[in-house]
Length: 312
Ligand code: UDP
Ligand code: MG
Image (cartoon, rainbow, N blue to C red; front, side, top):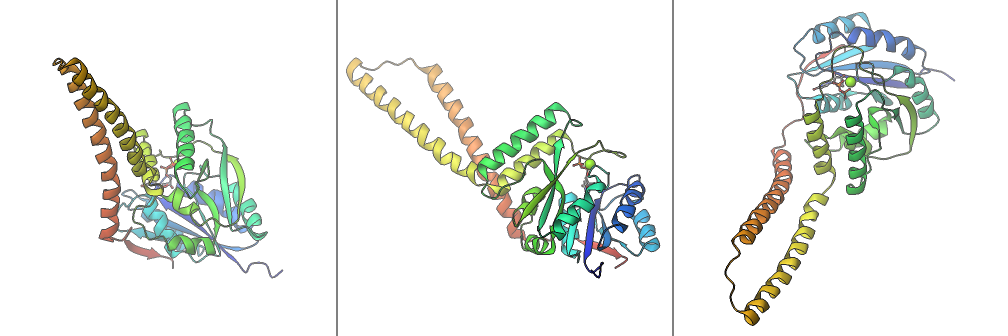
């Protein structure tokens, strides 16, 4: 086999990762150079305000296989990944975190599965013991809910770390939405999928930018971006409430006709009004979620802006 005819692109979003970049390249380079294909590492600097960009520039100068793009400001990991996916030219692409939480040792196995013909190789966490009980429980709840609500499946315990053939990458490029729920978008194209399993280690350096509240909002994003079930829910709630209201109305009318008018009822009226105002507001809120999303989409703003390409 004339060996190295295919190109593997490793895509690494970085936000304030000056301490992680060096250990990361040191771990990944020996593994990549053993692979039966060519490789490139593309770092995406997500508008870091530490020495990340400086370090990346130096790396690119030293190593022809390393390239970097830098965004004009901090756009978020989703945008950074989108920028990377738009620019890579590899026959296969692996997005990976720089903090070594995605074990680089999996790459050879992913590549060999890809070479044997699958288009997507997911890295699946089989052991989340490193995370808190609360985070594991909420993660499990989220995957159950989204599987139930959404038509395009989002695989469980799988992050952005996966190998994708270029055919999958070009499918993802065609997804025009500005609201980038990556877990969902990356899985949307489908194609033949295989899995390699790993247990996720703690972050080695720096700290995670994910706090609980942000994670919760992220989960809501996932649901609202990949399902219209919350909208439909209001049709059902409306129908059920109308039915009970009608029953109650008939009851009141007949009671009044038979027993005459019975005035007291302040407490029940107030509680009914309060309850239904609450229900109305939740319904409005959910409508607002979708309206907000439509608003973002119709503005057609770019997801990211590239300030600089280094080493291309
Ligand atoms: N990241 C980014 N932009 C952000 C947040 C994170 O590019 O706004 C990058 C970060 O540098 C790292 C990866 O995304 O390479 C994962 O980030 P983190 O470890 O904070 O997330 P977690 O592992 O907790 O999901
Ligand atoms: Mg991490």
